[in-house]
Image (tube, rainbow, N blue to C red; front, side):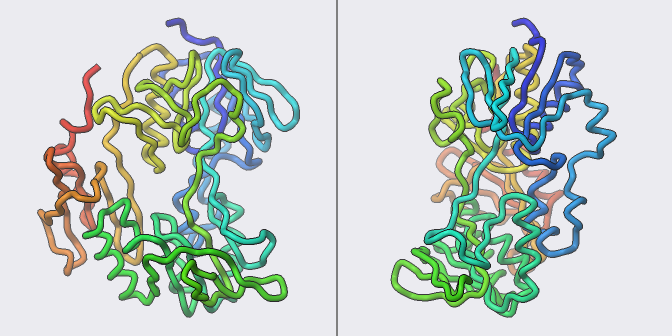
Length: 392
C-alpha cells in the first residue's frame, strides 16, 4: 500500500484531532485537512456534564490543545464548516458552503447527535447536553431552577443528575431501566449506583418512559410519562441517548447501520476510514460488530486508523474502557459485562465505597470494575486480555 499524498479528516472532535496528531507523530509529511462543523478549536466533551456544568471549570479549560500546539501540526483547519455530502468512490466531501474537498485518504469522525425530547420544539428551559454551547446554556439556567427532571438514565443522564443535585432543590432522574446505567454496569452494580444517588437526594423514577412535555407561557412545567403521570419541572434535561451523525452520508456508497460499518482495520471503503463514536467496526477477538461511545475509544481508534492509513495493516481489538465521576464515586469499567454476568467483589467492599468487582460469564472474566479504586482495578485488567486481544 502506498502512503497517501493527502488526508482529509471530517470531524474536529477528540477522534478527528487524534488522527491528525497520530499521523504527524508517525512521521507523515503529507497534506492534512481537518474539517469541523463547530467554529471553535477542538475541545473535550466529558467535562461538559461534570466540571463545566458544575461551574468549577471555565469552558475554555476544555480545549484539547493550545493554539501553538495546533499550529505545530501543520494542518489546514476548516472549522465552522459542516460536511453535507460524501462520495466514497471519489473520496469527495461537499460542505455547506458548497465547497468540494477530496483526498487520497478520508477519515470520518463526525460523532453523535443527541436525541431530542418528545413534544414540540421551542419550549423554554428544555435542554440537551452534547456540545459546549449546550453546557453553557444549561449552566446559566441552573441557579433559578427549583425542580429539575433529567430524562434518561444512561451514563449522561446519571452524570447530569449527580452534577446538578447541589444546585437544585429537587432533582428527579427518570428512565426506562431498573436502575441508572444498568445497561453499562449490569443490575447488581447499577443498584449500588442507585443507592448512591438516593442517599444524595436524587429522586429516582425507574421503569419510566417520557411521552411528552407540559408547558405554560412558553416554558416547561413538567414531563408527562407513558403511564399518564406528570413529573413537575421548571427545567428539563433530555439525556435519552444519541444517534451516530451519519445522515450526511446517505447516498455515499458506504454501508450505514447504527454507524459507519467498517472492517477490522476500521476501513469503510477503499481509502475511507471511520473513528470514534460513529464507527461500527468488526472486533476480531469478540467475533462481532462493535460501536463504542467513549472518550478512550476515540483516541485509541484514531491511532489505529492513522497506523492503517500509513500501511501498518493491523486490526483494532481494544479492551473497552470508560469511566464516570458521580457524587464522590469514580467508577471505571474495563470490558463489556453482559446482563447475566455474575458479579464478585474481589477487593474492598461496596458498603465502604471502595471496591473492585469482576464480572464472569460462561466463558470466564468478561469485565472488571473499580469503584474509587483505580489502581487496583487496573491491576485486574490483564485478566481480560485473552478475550479481547486478537493476533493478526
